[in-house]
Length: 169
Image (tube, rainbow, N blue to C red; front, side):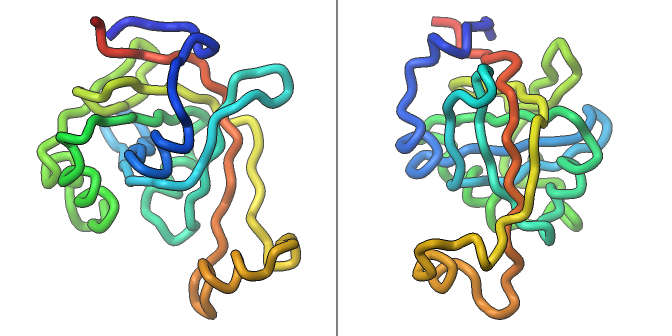
C-alpha cells in the first residue's frame, strides 16, 4: 500500500460509510477485534483531518477502542460484502471474525491492524469521545427510531486521520 495525503482522499463519505460500510479495527497485532460500521463521517475538526465513528458500549470492539489510543478504518470493495456482513453480525467474543470472514490482517508500520485487500485504510488516533445522550436529541424521531428501551446509546469518537494507506494503482 502507498501513503496518500488525507486531504487528497477522493471519496464520498456518505457513500463509503453509509452504503459500502467500513471495518473498525482496534487492538494490537496479537489481540484485536473488528466490526462493521455504517454510521460515521469524515471532515476537519480542530485544524486536523478527522473521522468520527460511533460504537455501542456493549460491542466487543468497544473495549479494544477504549484500551488503545489508535485504531483503523478499512474500506473494502463490493467483493467483500459477505465478509462485511459476517463482521457486523458475529461477535468477536466467541469467534475469530477475521478467519470466519476470510479476511487477513494488515499491520501498518505503526503497529495498527487494518484489513488486507482494503481499497484504503485510515490509520487514526483518538482525539475526543462522549456518549450520545437522550436529552441531546433535537429531533426525537431519530432517538425513537434507533434506540429502544434496552438499546444502549452509542459512544462517539472523533479520531485524527494520521495516515491514509491506499492500494497502489
